[in-house]
Length: 320
Ligand SMILES: Cc1cc2nc3c(=O)[nH]c(=O)nc-3n(C[C@H](O)[C@H](O)[C@H](O)COP(=O)(O)OP(=O)(O)OC[C@H]3O[C@@H](n4cnc5c(N)ncnc54)[C@H](O)[C@@H]3O)c2cc1C
Image (cartoon, rainbow, N blue to C red; front, side):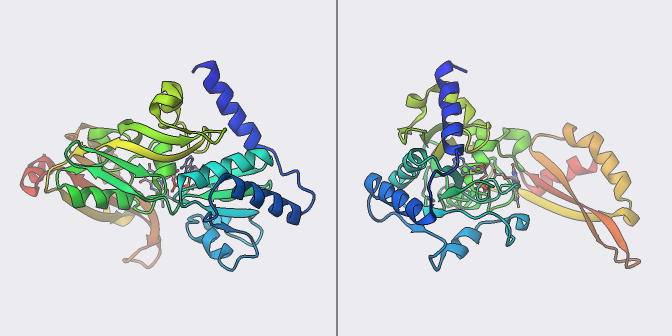
């Protein structure tokens, strides 16, 4: 990685990690709001703890309830950006007032990193930046960070029956955090990670400037494709290459618990799963459930599969 990229990274982290220097919440709010209004248009939506919808907006995309308790630290302000310029203003003002900035897209971070931290902070929430533009002729799409991967799949399917995108399984996961961290799902064996298919991006850097692939350079572009969200700037949108899928696919799932021979099946699966054709993915989800046979707790394995083809082609493979 070039020196300039490392310096940029360190600066982004350091500046946005310093705690607020304001004497009182009132002076903080006034200064910060003034800064935002100077750097963006007045339509910028800002929610303080006094706003009636502050709590519902904060909780809207929280997925880990461990970070939704009365003692979980809450942001000084939430900015639900409507335009790219609102994100730029959030970065510029956080830097100016040395306030920690948390970026949230889909809110699925396992550790609540996008909406909770122990030092005073502001959230820039991209939930309104959900535009998706699919070019079915070229097999590409631009998707804003606040869209969910479910919305992305839906938009691709509306435009084409023979394109898909290899990302995660849970449809409510956000594009912003998912693609910047890698992103894997049922097309993994054939097409790899979501991040492998990113061909361009728009990112707000620590100076509040919008960079694309060309202006950010290949080192930074490499880093935002798997290096983890929020380390390098705020990703506004990604341009992705779509992948070919057949118009008809086959899915199946079945459950086996311990009493039904789950252990032997899982053992067998370990030896065959990686040798199956790449058009077939079989994953296992393991849960603790109530046993239907004895009414006691047991371990249940759920086999879930996607085959890129029709069932008549799948059956001979499964019979082998
Ligand atoms: C129920 C559930 C199902 C999941 N299923 C899968 C799956 O099938 N496959 C898989 O690979 N992963 C899966 N994950 C993990 C998920 O992909 C990651 O947690 C991902 O980072 C979530 O992205 P997000 O935008 O929803 O989350 P957020 O909480 O919004 O963000 C996650 C991280 O990325 C940062 N970030 C968010 N947006 C941006 C942005 N625009 N620019 C820069 N940084 C940003 C945040 O600050 C935070 O650090 C799942 C998670 C959950 C909770």
